[in-house]
Image (cartoon, rainbow, N blue to C red):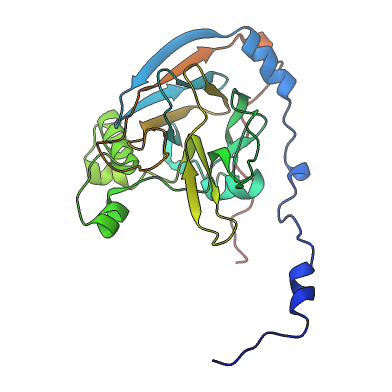
Length: 282
């Protein structure tokens, strides 16, 4: 094989990177507004997600919702949809580009095109202290997809029905009263809540490590529009070793939805869908 390494190879590697999407051009996040809303919140609904299963919840525009680690070290996989239009859903890839590979307080979860608007804003994160560790790992990632039965069968040759993909599919089917195949087409890449992940520094492979989440830890969101959510309590438990079996210790997760006083939002309005003309050059 011909060696095509150029003389300027080192110079190529030394070129400084440029951030592709400038976050300072996004709509400003007013954390003081959300903090004001948090001071007057009242619990209106809650659901417990059983280990190796998923549950749905609704959060209306202007409400807050929390995902809480209630017992042991446990990670969850979160899907979000426009409550009135399942075609508009959480877009992990664009969130990764506009925010970061791992999200925390002040970051937004963006919706799919053509809507492309904030679905939810993270208002509080008790794991915000973790930062980025020496391996490049951090918490709450939008780089992984979700554990699924298709990849598991490809790698291990068995049917395992309690992967997060299947859990989310069952939960959505039950909520919408539709069959599994109809629901499955709406299940999408997730926010990996509490999961500690990154890419290995040498081979650049996706890795996971034990979550630092403990009982009482939570991540909290402000619903920017009316939302339908589905949360899976991952069969990987704390994701220190496996994420598709019945042997790993797993624990429930809890979702709480809070109402806020209208006067606490000071004229806030749900974000509009993208104003792009959708003519695509024609």
